[in-house]
Each structure stands twice: as structure tokens, then as C-alpha cells.
Length: 276
Ligand SMILES: [Cu+2]
Image 1: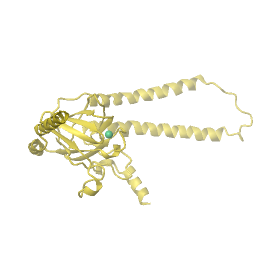
Image 2: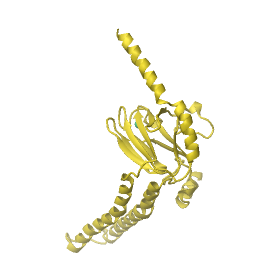
Image 3: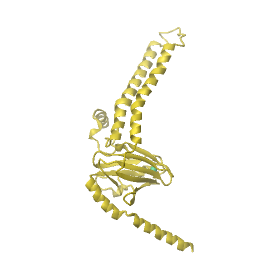
Image 4: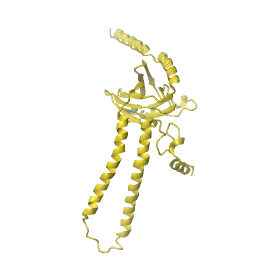
């Protein structure tokens, strides 16, 4: 009963009161946090949903009408009608028109996503089996982001979604995301920003978003990539520009590339020595 009530609430109450992560019994989208996602939600709520509801209701009506009107008991002699050119033209043209009407806003949304405005911050996301690696190429920052195991979760951290090293980005700035993978296909997806792109080894895909409010946003790998596909979540912390600048200073110390380079050098040296 409680679940049923919840279902009703979800249907009747718009998604406005939801946080930035999936909820039990969720049906709709997560609350949009970018213009791109707002457009997607608009397209779904005001184009796709009304059209599919009308089509479903109309087809259901036709089926029920045909079942009653042309039932065997009332029609001992079957009708021999096989063609009606007028109706055939209608049932070809009307679906075409519906598709054309849908295509206009659909392409608009698609092109808006495709055209990346000049980026304020560029991030590179690299999919690995089974975690994400991140780089801030302009800031000399490179780090890895692992899911937090159940036993290590802190209060407020959602299970299967929280990570140890979160991505931090400034609010109201264009964030360009370069996406690739190092082993198999993954996909970098963040529902609240309306972002989902495949991470393909040997290829760099790109996308962008501009978060319109601060907060912690959760996403997941969205391309079946192996046994731990469900355990490589994505956490993005959207903060004010001041907080972002502060984080940059800390992160440059914590995740400095140079440190990594020196580690690689040591490793290479060890390998060479072992080969001798
Ligand atoms: Cu994956």
C-alpha cells in the first residue's frame, strides 16, 4: 500500500523535490541541473509523453471497438472487405506527420548538445575496468576515482554511488568533458546534466554541460563493461568559483602529475634493472 501511495506521489508531484541521485520507485527523470537536461525533460514531458499516450489510447479504443463491433456472434457472414484506399493513405500519412512534428524539437535538442561552447574547464574522463580516471589537462591534475565500499560509507554517502575522489567543477561554467577508455567500452553518464557518452578505447568523444546550481550529482557507467560494471559510479561536486579555486590549489598538491611522472620513472628504472 505504501509503495502504491509512493507511486501515486511520484506521478502526481513533479520531480522538483528530488535530489541529484536515483530514488526508490522513481519513474521520471532526475531533476535537471543544466539547460541541456531541461530541454530533454521538456521534449519528453510535452512532446513524447502526450503523443504516445494519445496513440496508445487510440489503438486501445480501436481494438476494443473491433472486438465488440465485429464479433462472430453478431456477424455470422464475414465481411469480404479487403481495401480502402482512403484509410490506407491516412494511416500512412498521419504517422509520417507525427514523426516530422517530433523531429523538429528533437534535432534542436540534439544540435544544442553537439555544439560545444568555448570551455571554461576541460576534464578528461578515462574508463577502466572498473573505475574512472580523471585529468584536468590545463591544471596538471590527474587522479583516479573508486567507488566507496559499503563498509566504508560515511553518513550521507549513497551506496554504489559515492566515490573516494570526486570531480569538482565550478557552477555556471561551461565544462567540456573528453571521454575515452583504456580497456573496453564504458559510458560516462550523468542524468541531471543530460550527459551520456560512450568511452571508446583509442577514440576521444566529447560532450559538455553547464551546471546551474551547486550540489553533489551522481551518475554511473552506462555501457555494460564487465563483472563490476555496476561498481564504477561518477560523482561530480558542483561548487562556487571561489570553492573551485580553493579545491584547485589543494588538488594540485594532492594529485600533481609530476609526482606520477616520477613514480613512472622509478617503475621504468626498476623494469630496466630487472631486465639486465
Ligand atoms: Cu564501465
